[in-house]
Length: 473
Length: 58
Image 1 (cartoon, rainbow over the protein chains, first blue to last red):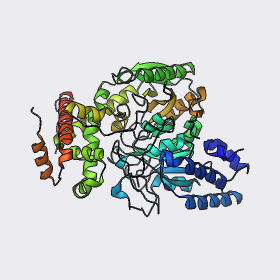
Image 2: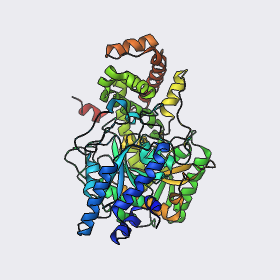
Image 3: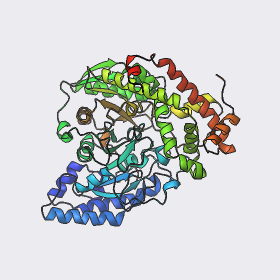
Image 4: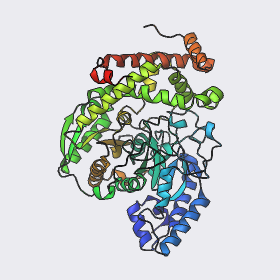
């Protein structure tokens, strides 16, 4: 096998090759590093590449395997993490000059758990500044979409998605407060999962709203996402918000097929005025594929979901303003223009309106729970459009334009499930005429990741979108 | 309800220790007015206070 193919292989194949001694963790890591060397100057997916640390860890993994101490299917497999997650001894910039010199002294729980499972950390990934929306002049390079480098990869976990799409690394970790895992996953044509609130520890995640922040995995296949989730999920005493409910063998659930599965297509999403016709067509085709594979499909309505972006802004943005308040007072000029203006705006929202948004968020959760009473998962588009061009400076000339800028980002269909806490995953479901990928969003009940993964895996078994690669070399 | 002016916004910011520069002021004013308008509209969706809310009050 050509060493250059190694970064494209999924965990199943890599683990099998490692087991049979046909490759080593060091060879896989070297292949990933070589690809990063060639492509990262264009894609700016990585902020920090820890080549020495990764090679040391890979050799250790190979020695452990040789002495029959392999720790499971992720043993010796490379991964990388959004720069909002702490990795001991490596910078965690949070995509911002404000944190350019911050080097954490411990791992985020999700990174610690992947390392404990034998996975090898390659480095830290680029992101939108503070995870807070488009960044016009990213301090660590402009992340680009591997399918078209003049288009955005989305965000905020930009590098987490583009690195997988470009075959730089098989598994990454991202953070998702309003769609920051699912949006770039959809725009880059990879799988990204936001787990149920409390399913995965936030310890060591530099988020923007602790109540809504989640860490989660991205990969080319649903099965690999399931493997990573199996390792990172579960109670963590350092995050009191984590659930004590048991962690399921998510990989096993991906093999169950669709027979008897009930899907609810969210009417408000499919009839949204901002949904691009081509995206609607691809999502409709995906639902038809799922029906053909054995799922029962019905339409469901979640009326309050149309107001979710406003509810989300009312909850998340004032929290972010509080979190970064001191830095906004002392170092506002070090922030990119758009995050700075959004944080100023959020700082001035009155508490009475924020409380109202919170109460409606609870009602929205009840509505989503009700919609999930008669179906196993909800489905719909992840984003309203394909990947747009890279963000450029634009003067806002009215309150209406300001609102469009605030909510018409691509998070309209994703932030409702941060507000409610339900698990949600984006799976690639086709390409637009511009050869840009589109994502199908699958939403489950609380702690219903197994259902979400089952449906996603069945869809990937019936399609080959996830096996297509961008031409970069 | 009338919109806030840039002067209002600058004063509100100053009250909590923030200094909004001239380059940002107009943009932040538009954003704040838009967000306030949409958040106020959420009030129309809220049901009147019920027994649960009253009994859970302090």
